[in-house]
Image 1 (cartoon, rainbow, N blue to C red):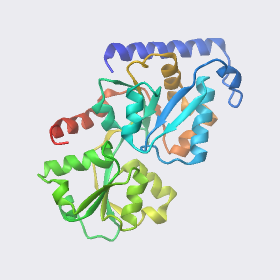
Image 2: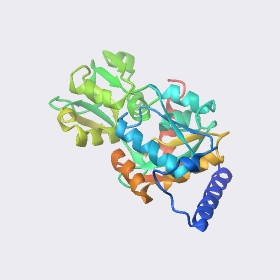
Image 3: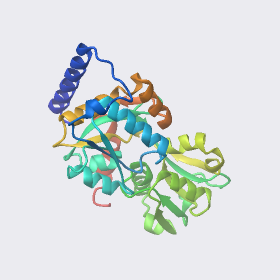
Image 4: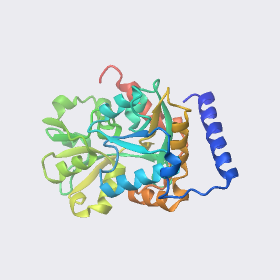
Length: 297
């Protein structure tokens, strides 16, 4: 987002907060139907970067966003990053929780809305995982593996490992015996834990949260390598939607999520500490990898 556009976005958001604060009307969760009367629905896309499709989590997210924005909210889920990104770029979604890799790929068509904060920072890592009892120390020890990637448009589940191999002069098509896409970070972990794959590329945030939630499964794997810290998968909107009332309402709801009981419930379910305002610099590392691999992918 350019400095001018970012400033305009922030000024408009501040104006919304001033008006809401000046009116001294508290947000009443659970009684949002009246406030949504006549307002268009917000179509919010979720990719496999989302931790899971747990009904409790989706219901809590929808309830919070509807109450906080005053709009009804349609949560739109798809199997692949490409499907959701295409809907977003074409204007069929108002916003979506995507990945840093497709954001960089479509940077000219998208604007950041907010960035999740995990452990207080808008960054995460990609993990290269293997079976817990495997004798392997570096990526070179994975030659001949069946390797599980998450999605061809995933930063942590594909781009990071592909860049690592490029830097070692390796071609995954010949280095690995076979590669497969599981279309879900949880599925990468399951594939390695069950020996369907001998190694995998996975979102470190998902691995760490699943270690807490499903220790019996995740403890069957171990982290062989952690990447440098990279921009956490962001919430983005299309350029045509940036600065609109719906985009601003969604941004305000996300950034203020920790200030209400319902919002804190959603954050607890996601194991996040909050959402922050857009930070382009967080994605410089991903942009650098895309530039190095230009012409290879």
